[in-house]
Length: 212
Image (cartoon, rainbow, N blue to C red):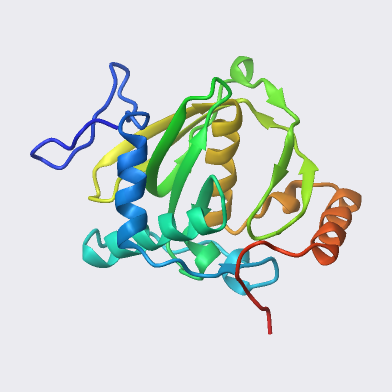
């Protein structure tokens, strides 16, 4: 991402998409070092199964949440994290994710909305998918290999983010979270059952919030 301009907007490319591939290491480290890692909520926790509230205040409290999310994401070794995955009922997600060309993307999106793709642009990729909120489980899930998300940055400025391949999957996965959907909700009953079995048999490598 380009350095912020004086009006607080981040850099955009010639097509109006945010530039999230510049200074990735420094930007992610700055967020993470200011933040505090929190445990991850898992499937069954009510906050994961309902649409989150819109972000309406873009101030210090949101900035601290974003810092905590980057810290939590790094602790859990994830590539994307939605606010409800650390128990916060707000539409915001962070990401630190490579695309299929190995280019790293780091950023944050508030109030994300996936843009509808034209039928001719929908090329499905049925790669495996996993989720920090369904630890140790993976399943193949077909998703478009290109995605565009519009929303707002941490200051409330309108932004558009685009991704291909693995990063496109990340954008779709994290947006789903904020509307109350986990990736296992998009699986067949058999595959969902298998994913939950994998989770029950595994041991997460990070702290989770037990479901009472």
